Image (cartoon, rainbow, N blue to C red; front, side, top):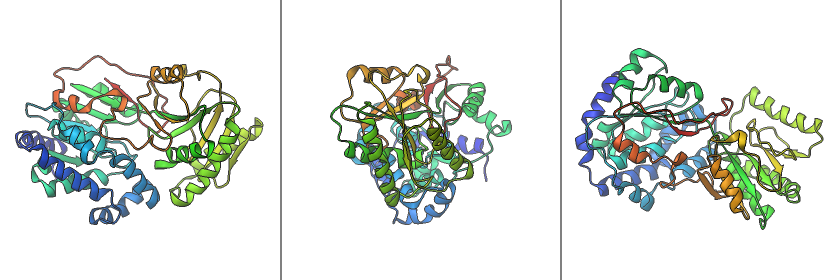
Length: 410
């Protein structure tokens, strides 16, 4: 197999052919391929799913739901609007995108902007999940060979200077999704522009006028999708004091019922121990909590307004609060808010100042579309124009214990 540097050289040389592809042809291939990968009964998915289920640990139903939540908003008119944007890479060269282990399908959020910019990209797949990206790119290449020449995915051990030094020296742009250690290593090595999406988490808001049962049904989806492993997974919910107990009970019922349709995936001893500790802590503090099976959801009513990352396995704290929640410790660490009921302007502004880049109705937070700018960053423009020199760091501090993504430009 060719080395990543050799592969990248070939991608860079394919830039002129990529620029010559008409929008209509590109849109047709994108729609056909993505539709196939969102259909669990398609030949592509039947070939891919055994490996993907093994690597992700998700249940089949949860995998399909998660892929649809990422991909359905990137089809047809939404994709057409993205591909028609004016940003184009005018010279040869390639970009490097480092993908995380989870959630699967995240390549779509950087691939569509790269296609819109006609920017060749080498994707580094995680060794923990090396299947989706190469399968999707191969399917695009079968339908339109010019795409097979301009996009590729490879897997290698991170930190190998023999492999990575040539890539870091020649990539026009590096985009990385990952933890602080990965981001810090790339920041030290990158010679050109680096965009980092590091650990973040998301929250819920239940305000005045919300129907507790309907809010619970929606919030349960935003908690359960990807088994709470994505940057848009809800870890905690703010609710008014008189609403919190009723909503917590409704949310626990919704999570229990949802576990039948979206069964939880594989869990390990550390995951289960974290949930046990959260339940034991609630007992010691005299807090109300709800939950049966450790992996099917735990809901804790906590009067302390300070938020903390969930231990996972669909565990969420309901923080009873009046007024603006305390967010100073989480500035730059929050990604999205799932909203039920009225969200006051003052509180929305506080979330925005803390770095929140997405607000959506409860149940739709993880259903992103082609127009969403993760962290406020326009990837199509970044792919198109790159950078000739290493920029100053514009970053945020992030808790290394979380498993999700944050957005910053470095």
